[in-house]
Image (cartoon, rainbow, N blue to C red; front, side, top):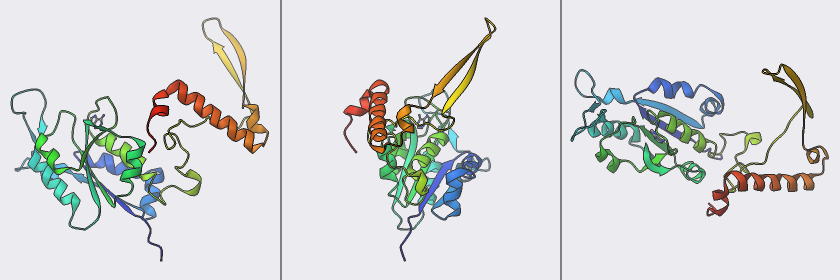
Length: 248
Ligand code: ADE
């Protein structure tokens, strides 16, 4: 029997319900149903100290906000890692991490288990970084916490786990997988007539928006050539940096 690839994703968070709800939709829900994915949210609060289940404290040296305690985070990470021999990667989400890219999505899809540590933005005690495998950021902006970054990365990774996407949803040939943005797509209607209203002048004008003619010819070679040219034109205009980046 062929062994199917299965991946486990555990997210350590103060908002487990948020992470859990996310898995009720679309391709993620289907992957769980098909036993390709095990999806768990681990409530950081349950590792808190004392009767109040404290998870954070004021920063040494002063400053605003609260800082997550390393001992609390450590206990959660230890439990998430489990005892199994599974190939596990523990990832801390932080705006100071290395920026997540498509090549990381491909790389992380090869693990058996991913543990996301979703800290909140004000911070975590730096000593916890000794017990994670990597620190990742999803971009140069600051969010309230690591929950959305964890979900963003989980989704990008899952698209590269064999069997998670259906045949028609294949991740091959998409933007970034070949260092180019995707070519534009069109569907019906062939000619879309849009009525544009100018509120100020109280006029109406019809606009005819047509599907590029080459796509209607059925000439596959020409269509392919057009798509490549469009992808290249877009990439040059919007993301010229991609064209100089090394292939992954
Ligand atoms: N936490 C807050 N902002 C973040 C970001 N941009 N990436 C990863 N984790 C974060």
